[in-house]
Length: 312
Ligand SMILES: *[C@@H]1O[C@H](CO)[C@@H](O)[C@H](O)[C@H]1NC(C)=O
Ligand SMILES: *[C@@H]1O[C@H](CO)[C@@H](O)[C@H](O)[C@H]1NC(C)=O
Ligand SMILES: *[C@@H]1O[C@H](CO)[C@@H](O)[C@H](O)[C@H]1NC(C)=O
Image (cartoon, rainbow, N blue to C red; front, side):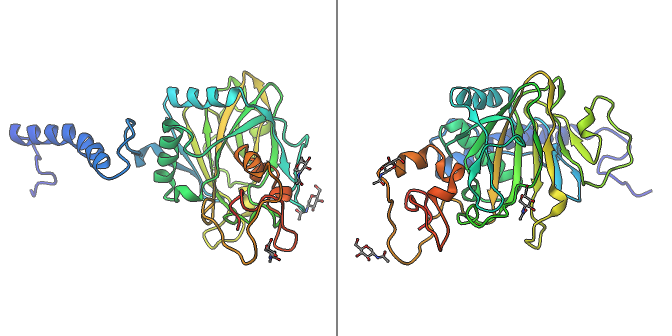
């Protein structure tokens, strides 16, 4: 019989075993060495390495993927400690004007972390880009959220229906949700319109997450889902919610990734100016995202801080 493997019928020869072992030992070092030589070598953190087999598809309509242990506990705790001091009640974008408003639909507290604000944040952003194959410059600043008992985010879409929030980088093409804590009960992410698999329900899921597909928050896990279909139209199946926390506290971090660059300056005709001396400060505090109607505006009704918000 033809051998179906090089070592059919026995253990691999000693030399082959030795070579295999050596290649396993030297591969990772070779990789990080190459990354260090390749430019941005100042970081002491390892180059962004993602392991495809850690990621699995959990729904195709909408497209949802789960990557277990995407963050180390240290990375998760670091994001929490950066955000803890800065938490503010979360807002939602008004569906017509784009104006940031408080709503009972969303009761968490949150804050934005500046892109690349420290080497750990930057390395997490590198990993997200490596996993999603989407450019780092298309990503918004990471938003860290805390949900206490009873707090939730009712079913919603991450794409916009106003024309203010899309001025910079277009639609939110994909969303990466990082779970920073385990949650004893509740707090699942649920896609109520997703096609269900016939594999029996997890009995530990809360009532809110019985319909569609639900993901239990687990510290370090990351969820990727797409808000647009591959043809660029909005995907109505991508409706999702954060279930109320029943027991424990939930911390998560969100990276929204736009269709186009969120960082690049979009040159327009006319003067590119700020109209308030505080614009740069407000932009640094994340107001371009939180309050785009005032800060960015539209082509016909420009906002006050277009220069600081990088939209001209
Ligand atoms: C905006 O929200 C209101 C009330 O929540 C709803 O009736 C309306 O259909 C929404 N419009 C769009 C364009 O989604
Ligand atoms: C640009 O600024 C100059 C000087 O402030 C002004 O005269 C001009 O009208 C402005 N142009 C536009 C298109 O706003
Ligand atoms: C800038 O904004 C502040 C706060 O809204 C306001 O008090 C101030 O008058 C503004 N300055 C200008 C030049 O519009």
